[in-house]
Length: 334
Ligand code: AVJ
Image (cartoon, rainbow, N blue to C red; front, side, top):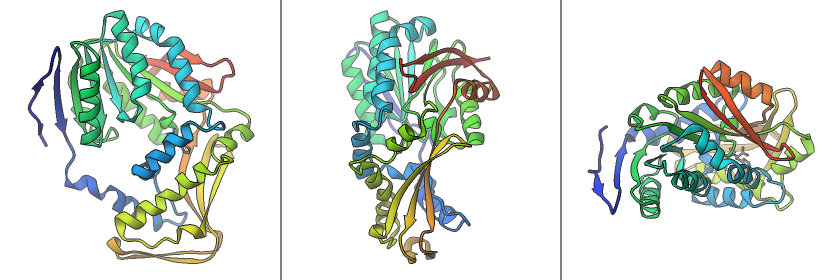
């Protein structure tokens, strides 16, 4: 698919938005539900948490006392943004999934202050989001060019424009932890391919720590994470005409010490027969049967180095907070 929108001249800068989503992309939830609910161990990928309600709940999670990740990463970025910009000489920033505009602003501000900022490249599956951030940042940063890409950052990274200079690609929030180890390395290798000459990846990862601290972050006392987890059943009910009895599932979160990841599941409290109309699919849950909804990997510096190396990348700088709760790693192609 080719560009849908013509370049628009904006005061000082330019905005252009290209879309690569086709009809096949709407199949993703249906395909994932068909695959995931017919497996011997039932599973749904975490990307379907984020409808309007799910995104609201996630924003609420980020403010929870138990969920230290968001505020810690923000602090690390604020502390080291100038250093990151100085070390990379970055002139453009690629944003993968543009929900994180506040974190991006910290980096764009540092690039603007250093006088290097030329271009912003938001990539998001939502055309509305891409247009919104494009306009917002175009107004905010004088002379900024915006090259928006409407697409899935897991599949459409080959459509990014050629770099106009050293590129910075943040992948923040610990989202890399949602990938199982093999896909994680494959995805990181893909990111490496789009860095271009002198480009850097800026990777946010949660760190291995006391399991109680980790488990509290995914099972907060206000029950927000439980609501967030259960919301995926509402999504499937609404989008695919399913009839999950959401009240008959309970939230489960535990740290798998061997694999070093948090796992979230939904456990059926009683036997349940679920009909998914759009797929002409009937699924049975036995009492206490669990549906895995997310893994969220936690990292050690060594493990991170090994993943980066396996993806053809090398660590340039490892930024962390005083309590070593979270890390932001700067990496480049080896
Ligand atoms: C957005 C994937 C980083 O794994 O911590 C928050 C999502 N899940 N609480 C994470 C999430 C439960 C979050 N990521």
